[in-house]
Amino acid sequence: MRKRCFDPSNKRFAHYGGRGIRVCKRWKTFEHFFVDMGPRPSPEHSLDRIDNDGHYSPDNCRWATRLEQANNKTATHWISHDGRTQSLASWARETGIGFSTIRYRRNSGWPASRALETAPDLYHRRALSGARLQ
Image 1 (cartoon, one colour):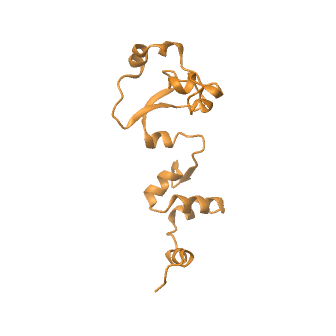
Image 2 (cartoon, one colour; image 1 turned 60 degrees about the vertical axis):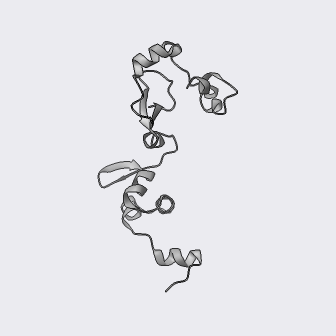
């Protein structure tokens, strides 16, 4: 967090400090950070900003897993279907339909229900890949 925001030689600086993301003054000491955030819940958790354009501060940070953080990116594509909204990646995991297949279908104008409920056409997939059809 600190290197990303304060060290111009850090490879991620341009995406953090370089675009104005700051660390709150209270978190200048680790003790204050620890009082506000508590211990990391597990090795799978890391610090996440709830609002990606907001600063590192107690009201904008949480401990989150890699999946939770992946769903909190600016470029995350959200799909609403059957009364639920979740990321395209989450729908792919749930339906077993490939991420790229769902993305292609949505970009081609398919409604969410059709994109998420239509099984992939294995015949055409094999034909396109050059596999022998039986």
